[in-house]
Length: 254
Image 1 (cartoon, helix red, strand yellow):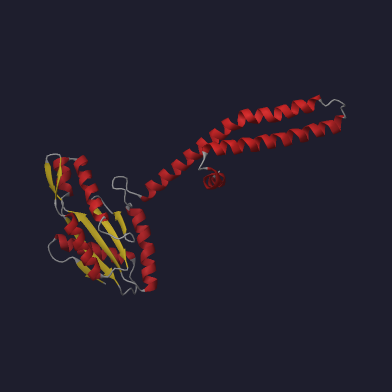
Image 2 (cartoon, rainbow, N blue to C red):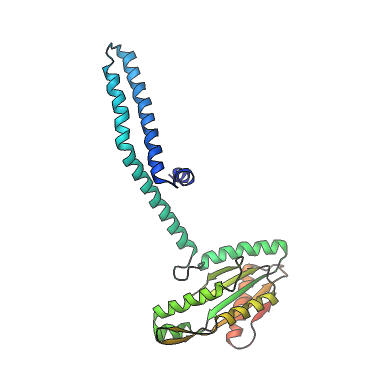
């Protein structure tokens, strides 16, 4: 079924009516060939002098597929479309966070591992930034989940406007996000963190409420790999985030 679906998507899918027409013509041709073969086999076997059954066979081979093929083709197209939609939906839910429409934790880490392996092989710097919304619990408690989700959506929109297309950005926990930046050293990661904070930290108005957008960012870099892994980088970035929240520093170099 998957092979049929791939052929359909590649060659036929763009035009549904063309699909029905092509399948109908092919059905008529196939039906005609099969019926003629059967009629010829009967004629040879029985040796009948009458050719009336040839006429009946020709009529049936043309009429039956003409009537049934469009219906069956439409059913086939509908089934294929449903399979494609189900496959896209499944793929989306395995990779993206439903609320924020950015990568979920699992897919973020998968992509991060891939980029880390490349950076380690090429001896290129790679940075990680843990970004956390400071007032998640307070907003959730005071305004409820609907306003909380609006705040997170606005936070994501602002961060997306500040990062590169080559960066990997995903939701790590409730209000904690992970940003992986290949080819970015610690100094550049610090500047990016500052840019994100400046772009985001403001008061937004939702209904009649003024809600402060404030985040904490912990940065870490690896440029001397040794036995370091992605977990090493994330642990350092997480520790840097904790230090920021405690009012100390916000960067770690490895």
